[in-house]
Length: 408
Ligand SMILES: *Cc1c(COP(=O)(O)O)cnc(C)c1O
Image (cartoon, rainbow, N blue to C red):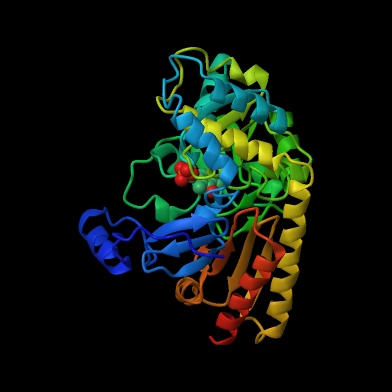
């Protein structure tokens, strides 16, 4: 593919990085390239080098970069009306609520701007529902070790990784973490203050760790038995990522409420909380809100993302491509020195390759060879490419992985 022209005036990687180091808060471990262009599964850096993008803005750019139909919808909306706030109704948001609730089988939608905010909405919904039920003593949310739910104070507290808590104490009350995957441990942990269980169908940030068979079903049964809410964090696993519309659908359950963000707007910021009708009444007028939530441009893009995801055969293709990658990665595992690849995991196009070492230097070598991936935990490479990636491009990624891992 021909790289799109780069603006003649654009500085290269080095001057941009120098300036970034002077002025940006240094809170990210950034890879040393500045990306300036994207088309489909390819991105170009400020020096003109092309990459196969197998991280897609961290499971965000499901339709790839600059998908013509998504771009057209956002541009048309930019020329019409950008923002009105939720003081008024707006059609893109209404259309999106109709499409999303139908697809998820959860009839009410609240829009926000990010995954953390969508999870905040789940937390606030839980507390308010328990007050309205006359059980205000129930406010505790159980979540899981190695989970990830966001960076606000409440969602980082729900995040079961002590490294994200350190230095930010005192943390809000009402959160407890349990090992992921064992229903009996969860049953024993439920106490008189427990209100809800918050779970990811696959722990993406935590290393692409999959819920074992029966785990989500067991949690559903437990929540029904004890009168708890089952909250599913679909920020990463939603929007077709696993080859089903939402990750919970791989487990044949219906949650009480879910959170969405990442791929919903294909890169324009938008998040959502969807819930059951009986719960929705608790967030009555004045109880919750967001200025930018569901803004018209993001919602217009999201409507196209949904329409494309819902085309016949699209998700079956995501499943098939995921299986193709898993088979290729397992063949590579068998061909390399024993134990170099410790495990290959994933579903659909959320894929993890666990190595016998820290992945940061490996990610640098892959990048130099033209492949972008990122780390999920210390030792797992995460592949979350655009869902439109082709089988041939997945083979290209596996080829680069093979060259880099055999040379270690
Ligand atoms: C990325 C992520 C979040 C946080 O989303 P932000 O948009 O960064 O706030 C929450 N939960 C899961 C499972 C995620 O992958």
